[in-house]
Amino acid sequence: MSTSILCAIDVNQLDADREVLRTAIKLARVDEARLDVITVVPDFGMSVVGGYFDKGFHDKAMAKARKMLNDFVKSEIGADANSGVRHIIATGKAYEEILHAAHEAGSDLIVIGSHKPDLRDYLLGPNAARVVRHSDCSVYVVR
Image (cartoon, rainbow, N blue to C red; front, side, top):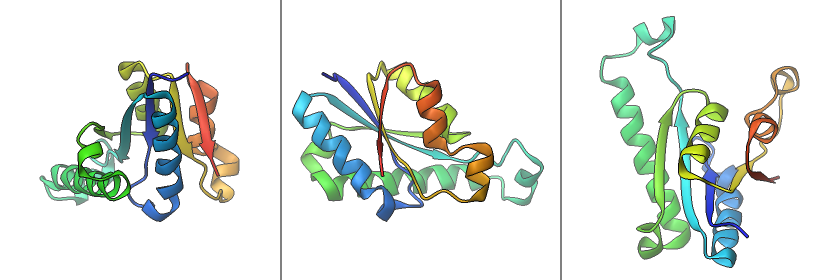
């Protein structure tokens, strides 16, 4: 039985993650668990690439990701239920931020999608695989 569920959503792949969110919602309702949703914005500011973006680019990207995540969740569960969901917008490597958010929130289940892998995923490992390997709590992978 879960008391706190963290659902990882990629706002750049909302169609692919629709079933991920629906699964997390079902699991949260069954267990009457708190539902948190997270999306992670890449951290361009810490690399050489960051110099090519305007100074306010990161803040704009965070605001856009927050709106996209909020609108997406609201469209699936309605405005009233959405108001009880905690929306987390993080910056960094997706798997690290998902694991950090789960730890901080005391989540006992992470729901994450397994996107179609490409060659680089076989060499490096996709975010879902890294979350599964390093998580302190259960992970439900939606295919």
